[in-house]
Amino acid sequence: MIQYKGALVLGALIGAAAVVLLAPEKGSVTRDKLKKEGKEIKDQLVDDFTEVKEDLSKAAKSGKDKFTEDLKDFASKASYKTEEAITFLEKQLAILKEKNKNLQQTS
Image (tube, rainbow, N blue to C red; front, side):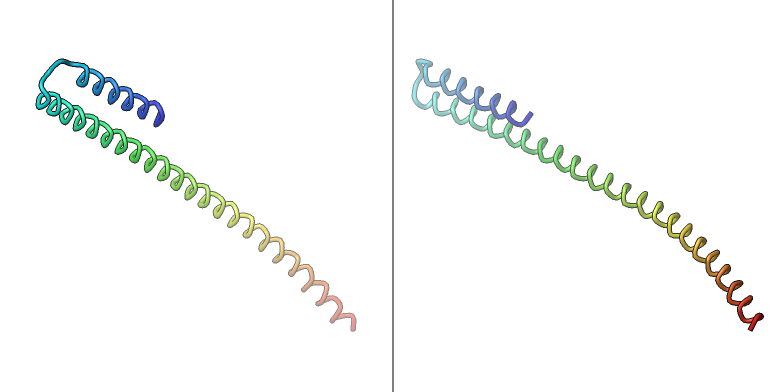
């Protein structure tokens, strides 16, 4: 998209310059036309670059939002897995306590 806009602007600039330079008019008229065409092309370039900048900014924000969402999902899943691990360890600890209690009674 960026290359297309650049080629379009370059084509417009070349076409405008050719028309102005080949037209049989006085130098002052030609200079005025060149200034006008140059300003229009500059304005178009500014608009195009602003649009590209906004598109890139949106893409970066979208990527950041997606990363943040994925990170939250990961943290949530990790929290559930941690809870499962703690529950498992608590069960194993209860088993060990019971075995230790039995050992103490037989002594």
